[in-house]
Length: 168
Image 1 (cartoon, one colour):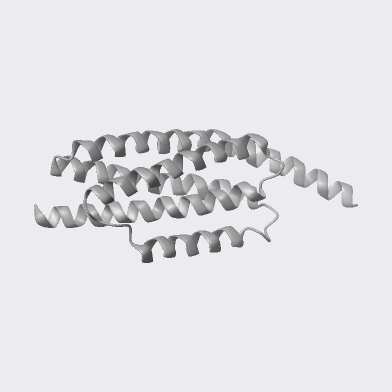
Image 2 (cartoon, rainbow, N blue to C red; image 1 turned 180 degrees about the vertical axis):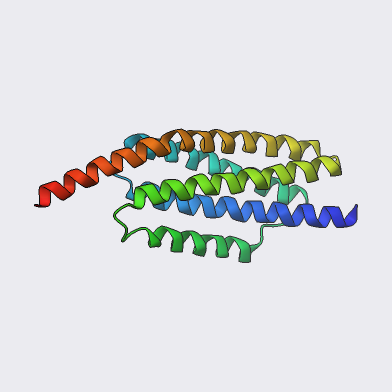
């Protein structure tokens, strides 16, 4: 099982880096969302959850006498900053950001399913419990985004059309 432990720790470090990236992405999105209060409020709630996820994963890494990969965390932050900057010039940023958030949530869900299986295989019930709690929160967020993609898109289209007409 030594090799399984190596994989598990590697995947755990990846998950930590992913949560650090999510914190940067959510923070950037929240800072730019002005006219979508329900979306902003939900992202703020999920940011707080995500900070808790990163902390819980940090604790698991410390328990395993491992540490987050600085390179992975920095790479995650750089990627998040680039993704955050890429939408600044797009007038439809809120729609694109919501699509990206929905996709990101599903990547997180997949990662936690893998971590649950690996931790279970290793008999690490504490880690399984942590991953299941995080997974549940990621699934709730993905479901919320799925329900609100329609609303965000329609609201954006109405506002965009109104803005276009007011410029004529």
